[in-house]
Image (cartoon, rainbow, N blue to C red; front, side, top):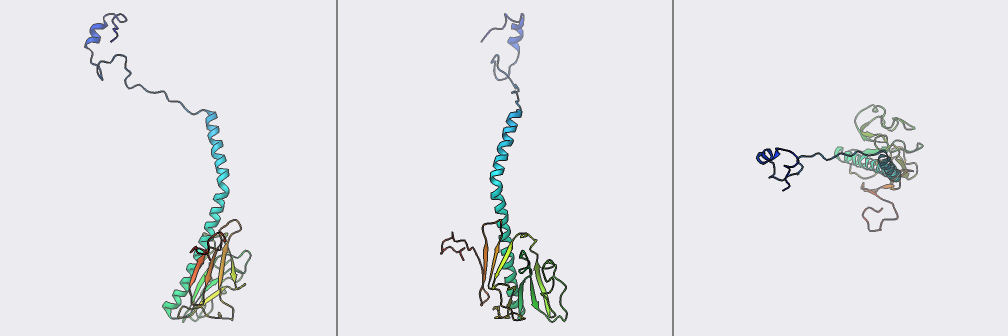
Length: 231
């Protein structure tokens, strides 16, 4: 051990009898604070530039993903509405119908309502979900009760709908849950509903069969024919 007596006169006695932490290791730093170094302006600007470049690269994909989510939200809501109309017909042993409100508007939206036969003598009030359509509230008539409605503004504002047969808006289920051949008024029932978005790349399709069964599928040609998602 280095002797420090030559540097501090009279320190030998003091040093010899002073207690030391962590043994008698002379010259060891105890509880010393390391120097903190901040970020320079150049480093900060480089970091901001990198984040901006990454955001610019990811923004188009994120925008497409958002639009695809709106397509799925609109398609799933339409599928749920159709199934609700069928279950209402089965449960009440009376006809019920699913109506797309704005399919003939520009652009056609995914708003809909479910109407069921009722002993009510007057028509229900105008539909709030279909208020923006070309014929707001005109889908319900005397003897109808509105079971449920949904506006296309609820999570699928930019989703657009195309149908087959062209111009069809309604599908009616009888008390057995089957699709009737002609709706009230003589119009053909909905057989296929396509939900898309000009800014999206994953359209979805809903098929309806005469027995009342429904299926939502992906019409993309990239899917294999045996893929359960494929139409």
